[in-house]
Length: 297
Image (cartoon, rainbow, N blue to C red; front, side, top):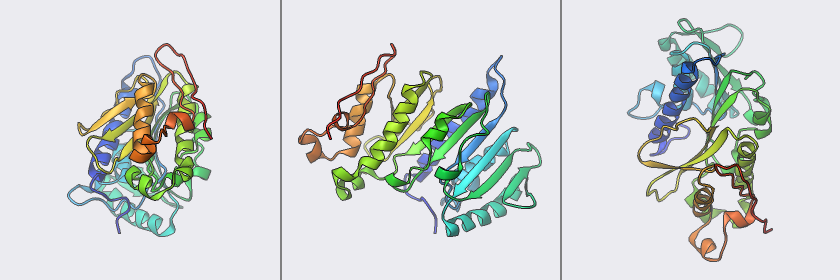
């Protein structure tokens, strides 16, 4: 069984690889700013079984992060998987493929080190929400985080811990569900968990002027797959031409309209339901002003 496979997976993986590679290159190239390393964190690793038609190192988020650790020094990779069987398959796939990328398994656990870059890959069995606290990401360090939950209730990034991190963060999150199926299967009153996660992300960027939140979605996609990227405002996000991006900071009204379209069905929108009316929807434009829409409980 392959975890997380769909017809959109190759595009998602290409986007993830482009974003991570760009982040590594940008942070290392800046003059007069120290660089103390990167931590690449996969909060929902899966089994790294790969995808048909793709080489293994491009075919899953654990493989992409491992490849980057084999290409750059001062990189630490942490792979979290809470499901026992999936975690066992992940270890098997890592043990099979990492040696071909110059990694050696270390004694006493699931940790591999690259003989060329001295960067490392670690597998951690458990729920990343309660384990990962980002405490080792110090000033002049950077965290690139993949959060790819299976459902809206499985958001795996602890935003409180992320807000306490001293280094710089880039967080790439899937919307946690197929929003078209969500609107068919989940009553409106039960969708609050997803909105709570989004609001926590907005609170993070609202309190940090140098961060932005971008919504990336596929064009003309009947299933309405979308991704949320939390990143510094000076980062240029690389994404495929089949996707469109909307900034919360520079286009707040459009961002809110996109969320309404994604997570309310046509009849709900015709009845006047809007995300702005039910949830915190901060507006912080270039001038730094902010407003909060009224709650309608």
